[in-house]
Length: 96
Image (cartoon, rainbow, N blue to C red; front, side, top):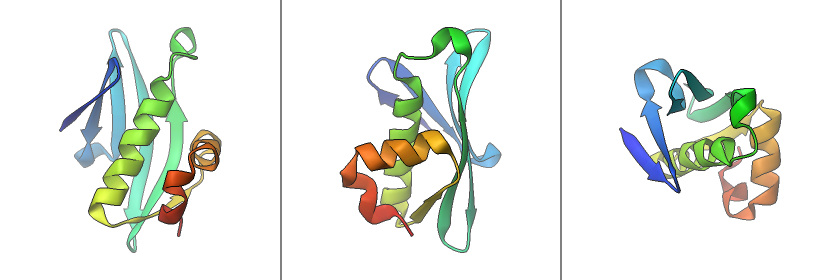
């Protein structure tokens, strides 16, 4: 499934437990796992030359929207995602 957000195509690769953005030779990734009804966000990574363009935010938003649509509670072990949720209170009710 490919989700269009702003100017980046965020692809959900559910078989690999990740969201990603294809950046040509590189990929930005957000890795997660689902366990006991929790959507656990583990790691977000954007290649250095692409940092600061909103890619991590778009992947995080796509992941949180997925969790919301699936009725999953969210737990974050990723510092970026934790800060994102703090800055976007609309996702606070997903925390579990």
